[in-house]
Image (cartoon, rainbow, N blue to C red):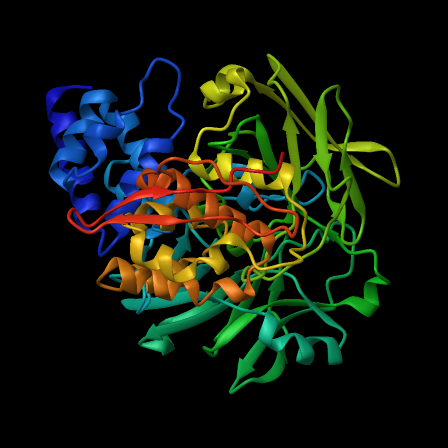
Length: 535
């Protein structure tokens, strides 16, 4: 890239890094140390990252990577530390925002295609009070049609208007829907307009395949003060349901399911993600009804898991039946879990189901076929080439790439699931609280595996190491043995001064021996005997 482009990238990188508050910058540095960079690039040395400021981090990213790749790396790391909004803003500002497959807003070959649909408009994205919930804004200076590129929602207006809208949750209305034999058939959208009377029609997106079927049982669910009312649409198209002279509150497309006798055909998408930072190649494969809110929820979740979408056509070969079962055709050396998945529509706020695929070694070409179980026919196919993926050196070494991977692996391989007696960290609680000097590194290793984001932030907010350790120990009674072992190994890795001269083993009763020898003149721990394992 040219100097002007690199300068622009530096400004955007610096802005993104300066926006990190509290412990987020330290967490960013920790995740950046583990990031599996593409072939041809080197990781930034740990010693350069340890205390790097936002300015220094921006310079390091541009020194070690091209401007374009520095932005990509930064966005992926931001997502991995639960800062997806900062990642999105960075990508948008540098012109690298996530691009959806054009089919994802389309229909199947059985449905007719609309002629001359309105051009899509990118809405303004607004964060909620805590930055986690997003809403959108479209403004029109006069009469015309507005088509949101993010939600596939359309509006027809007769004068200047400002429209605000967001995806809401079907989940809390599930009882009302079930009582009337209704199922959701698209996102639930909460819309407000100023002035409201100038909006003459709203086109609500849906994922139903209605080719050759009666659409009389398709309705618009309208919730006013939590009460459900059904509105008859003015037109039902292959991808949208039109409501003229609408009233604004949470609304969405529903279908009376008893009419279709359980065989409900939907337009579906398959989304493939590569999970980064693992010791072997790993993928998540989703099969979903084509709902924009669900696709976005999956994308946001995968970014927090340090995963990247593999760019493959998403549309299935044909409409699929809700409730049908699907599986990935077995390949040599490919492990798939679970064995099959049921096509279901789950609200965007719920955890979406996926198939996990992993292999001891990535082949040059990975031919994937998603099969319908009942008919034995492929519904989606993709060829994944090795050069399309982010290459992780750990694949070839057969070892993990992070401290978290190391402690998880050693725990799962050697430890039983139930502890019959107090654990080492419980027996020596007070000594460990007093002597642990590097709490932040321990929290980073436990984050996402043992500690939730809320727990991590609460512990990190304490001022002293003693206070942080005491807050951490409040959680220990609720942990299983694996969690306690992960803390034990994190303590050993991040506080090497505690290891000292190590020689202790468990005695016959199964208790761990440990002693402290303290030099009063120097005030430091001279000797600690740690248990390393049974003989």
